[in-house]
Image (cartoon, rainbow, N blue to C red; front, side, top):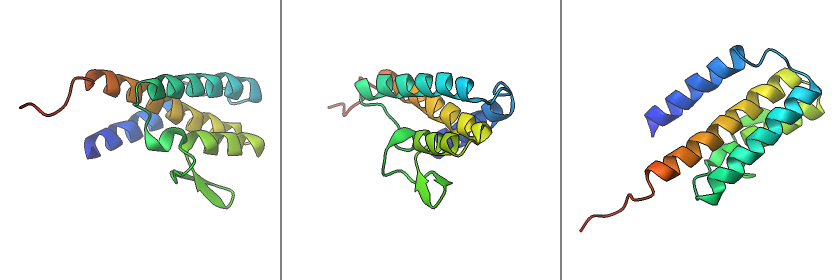
Length: 113
């Protein structure tokens, strides 16, 4: 699990510094919709990762509260900080995609008797 967390962190950092140069409201709304769709897909196979959008997650601090990546993205967008909003929406989308992939790869996992 530590390796997965490290990989997610590294990939999120790469995404945040490379292809997310345009940070405005329209770009955020598009990425936010993609993140929601990716997490819905992951949830459909019970593969959603906790920090992606769980209301009880405490991954990022925005304002006075700690929250999930998707909720932090929404919080930063409300504050007008679209660069941070895009960063955390991108992480949430990535976690949704990877959660789906992980669930599909491990769907036959279980005890072998």
